[in-house]
Image 1 (cartoon, rainbow, N blue to C red):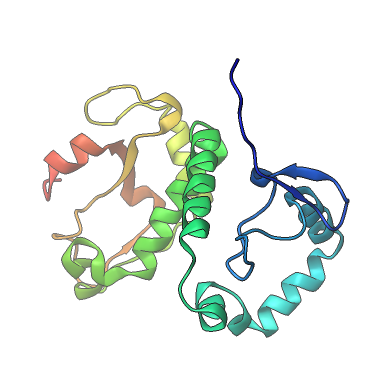
Image 2 (tube, helix red, strand yellow):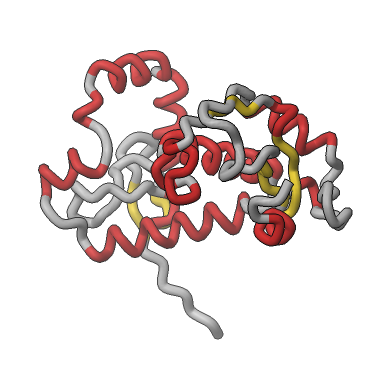
Length: 199
């Protein structure tokens, strides 16, 4: 007979005894977990959503890892393991969903726009280039491609695996060039890499 030992915890809100996985990590607590379960926290947040948004805008210094680090110092090892475990569970649960893929594409583009100095050795910033199309326009263009790479005609399920290609290439674009949605195309990463600076 297989015996599984599960660590249980009581939620102070709903008074229900639940598994540790039903609680968010909290590095300020001795056991590394919040006192209220995930479901109770979600319900409370939904009821007070607007208040929390406003509070976060007016008190940005009271959020994030740096705020908690000042309060307790180093993050306990148990909390680090819990955070990694939850991140892995979230990724496995959502990695194949369209919402997750769209968010990943948006994050990559947002990072590129926020850190132009890291874009192709800083060429984007050096040549004073910019993009004026929106995330929605790019996502529509990816959908129009039906998951097919423009160059090699290979199929990629739901467009995942297609990357953004600039035309003219970043290294050959005129100084101050502004890319519109008509100046980019979705091609696979392999073609994008081998294409290099060719048009």
